[in-house]
Amino acid sequence: MTDAQIVGWGHTPFGRHKDMDMQDLVVAAAREAIDHSGVDAARIDGIWMGHFNSGLVGDGFPSSLALEVDEALRFTPATRVENACASGSAAIHAARNAILAGECKVALVIGAEKMTARDTAGVGEALGGASYQREEAGVTFPQVFSRFAQAYFQQHGDQSDVLARIASKNHANAMANPLAHMQKDVGFDFCNTISDKNPVVAAPLKVTDCSLISDGAAAVILAADDVAADFANAVAFRAAVQVNDYLPMSRREILKFEGPATAIARAYDRAGITVEDLNFAEVHDCFTIAELLIYEAMGLAPQGRGRAAIDSGRVVRGGALPVNLSGGLKAKGHPVGATGVSMHVIAARQLTGQAGDMQVPDAGLGMVFNMGGSGVANYCSILEPVRSGA
Image (cartoon, rainbow, N blue to C red; front, side):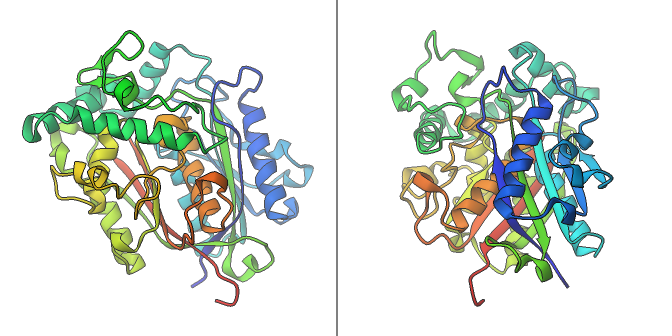
């Protein structure tokens, strides 16, 4: 059976783009991906757009905006894909499935979001649409993840210092990522201290425990195996898994993080690997407590002992399995529809030796984990380079 390979990519800087609207972001990322791959736009059989929106500023019907890149794209099928903060990965998986089904040979996938035109309260209200409205309406996502942190602290003791280490790690990592929204190494002490500049948002989570509100876009070109040889860069899917869990938090034992753990375990199984085989991971640190729980879901530590992953130095830059060398959502930024595509772009750059100052030496196997909601829509990709002569 033929599979899809990532053969080109594009990525705008993440941040506050006052001079760029949704169309500008989409076109910039898509044009870069097409140019990077060297694909003739006329060869693209379908376009998939990851875009959350849900009341955020932007175009509510954005799927055809990519046609503005090149006149050859006119009349190409284009579809918006939405699965909360995993919309970008949902678009990638949908395009890959079309290639697997033989309906498409070359696909353009874009993730994009325009967020900063709304104030913080407005963004919080919009993102709240990704929670269970019968029970969680009016609850912001910092409040949702504060419930995870409160429950974790109650069972395993105060872990504020660990959350601060995750935050400071990711801010330090972002210093090597020119595309990151916040390129400032704020340090552990700042992240670990409540202050006027780092107030509590939803106890015990402080500002430094929360991902950034950003504008941005990312794009990839996917090609079927039998045409991927035409392109200079190629990254293969060793596995790609989607798992959805119950939407109501009341129906889940939240500290088990079963949706993320199941998606990751199934991806390991399909790829024929264990966590020990990975060289790096880009994971969904929408809040620092999420990254801590993902360490456990990945199998880096038993439940309740996630801190061992960072205490040992394993997940830091230069460690055996560095996590979020891009700065993660925490510092790279989180334009929600773009996040999953961005993660795949960062991973593809790592695996082809094009990650610049973020580069992991001899990276041969990487993991992307992107989730929508509070561990509800879970996407895990295991990626590897297509070596010459392999």
